Length: 246
Ligand code: NDP
Image (cartoon, rainbow, N blue to C red):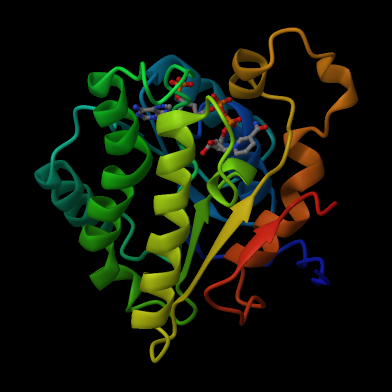
C-alpha cells in the first residue's frame, strides 16, 4: 500500500487513545504519536510500564499523557463508560483509538483447548474492543477526522494449526472492523485494521521462543503505517493492511 508520511505536527492538538501502551508496538505507537504532537491516553494493565512510557514522552518534550490503568480481562462496560466521561471532562475530545492490546493465550489444538483460556482471550482481544468502542463513539463522532485502528494478525486471515483462541479472536477483529467501517461509512470516522506481521516484541518471543529476534522488524519500523492510518490523511475505510506485505 502506498501511503504518505505524516508531517511532524500531524497530531498537534489531537487526543489519541492507545491500548497496551506499556510495551511492544503500543508503547512505540504512543511515543511516536506524542513525537508528532498528540496528547496520548496510555491504557494498559501494568502501571509501572505505563509510567515508563509516560516518562519517556515527557522527557522527549511531548505533551503530558494521561494514564488509564485497566486490565481488559476484568473490565466491565461501566469501566469504559466511566473512562469516556473522564476523557471528555479532562481532555475535552478524542480523535483516534488504536486498539492494540492483545493476549496470545495458550497455543495448542482445538481438541485440547481450555475453554476458560478461550473466554479470556476473546474478552481481552474482542469484547473489550467492542465495549470500549461503544462507550467512546459519541466522543469520536464529534472529532473532525475520527479514526479507529484495530490490530489483526496473519492467523486472523488464514487459519493455522495450534493458534486456537488467538487466531479466532483476530478473525473476529477483522469482522468487527469491517462491520463498524460499513456502519460508520456515512460519518467522518474511518475504521481500519493493521496486521503488524512478525515484530520484535514480548508477544512474538513468547510465540516463537527459539527465533533470532534480531532478524525481525522493530515496532519503530512499522510506525509510518500506524501514524498514517490514525491521521487526518487516511481517508480509507474498512481496509485490513499488512504492515509487512510479502
Ligand atoms: P506485547 O505483548 O509486547 O504487548 C501487548 C500489550 O498489551 C502490553 O502492553 C500488555 O500489557 C497489553 N495487554 C495485554 N493484555 C492486557 C490486558 N488484559 N489488559 C490491558 N492490557 C493488556 O505484544 P505486541 O506489541 O507484540 O502486540 C501488539 C498487538 O499486535 C497485539 O494485538 C498482537 O496480537 C498484535 N500482533 C503482534 C505481532 C508481533 O509479531 N509482535 C504479529 C501480529 C499481531 P502489559 O505489558 O502490562 O502486559
